[in-house]
Length: 320
Image (tube, rainbow, N blue to C red):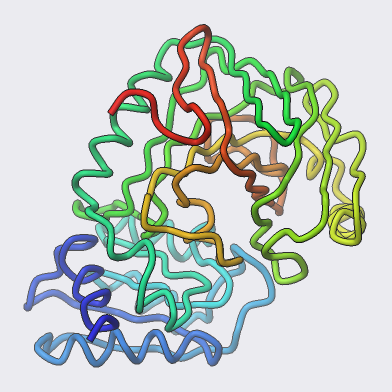
């Protein structure tokens, strides 16, 4: 029953699918159980289609040519895949052609049972819009936590990016249940120490059990210290052989109170009471650092100021 409720939320509140529209599910073997839940929930939609393809090996990799062609012809696309299609050219071409894209990367059946999909998207969306307003025109950002994080950067000239988890107009993409407001550190300005104690949604890491301490100097991660998971992160970044992967860009404020940290990308990034910093590519957030990689690192209960205005206190939004 809850799975059907979550599916209906995705079909209505998050995408406003209409009975005559061409609905497309793109999936792979890992994510097929979730795609099947969505398929069963769309029995009344006569123009639904499902494409199964081999799993991609990294986020942003292009789908098969058949899937890309179907995406370009669809009205609404649900990307039920292990690795995200969000940064693929196929997704960009489809939304440029008027499709609405709903990113369901790394979903599990458990996410359809409880968690972020059961939130009040409209109410949380208003909070998200309010947070975005607070960031407008600000020049600096500071973040601290009881765990020891003390981070500062410039955000001057960087617009906020509210993400509401809803694709309601042609050409819009979303990633429910991720409701967040993001901004971007100006290149070369981030400094401080950050303790990652929440999640790094990558297959090698997930929920954080060991200490991970990042030293950030002039916009770059210059040291990674801590336990076994810190070593995994250090080796992961080194293995990309891309100096830009060490650059700090996105600063994302998770705002969905129903999300919980579970090692899954969209649930974790949107988790209320958290902030995530991302290293690597930041061009989607108004930055200039290009990289094939984008790694989100989530920590709990932050205090966050934009200039002298406190936006988060112990992870809670100050103005609602």
